[in-house]
Amino acid sequence: AHEENVRFIYEAWQCVERDLRSQMGSERGLVEEYVEKMPNPSLKAFKPVDLGDLKRRNTQDAKKS
Image 1: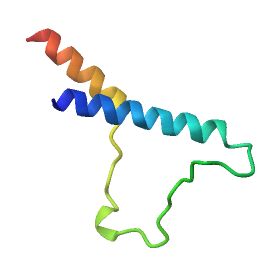
Image 2: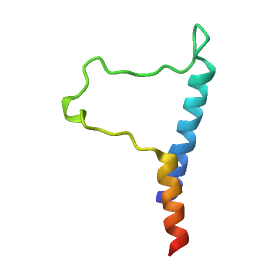
Image 3: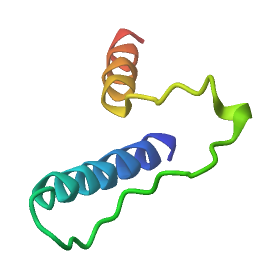
Image 4: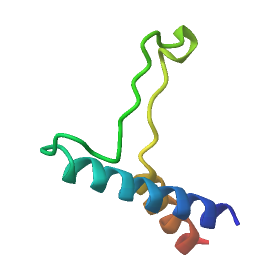
């Protein structure tokens, strides 16, 4: 179930990124990127997770066992 959730989020995010790239030149797009005006200081050290890399590592770990 966890792997299905990760796959769903990864694929959905790929669609969002594709839409963002395709609408960069257009004046009005359906996708709007959210940027906080006042970021939460407790998230200052947050590092985004590369879901593609995580999926590759999980796939490799599964093959080893």
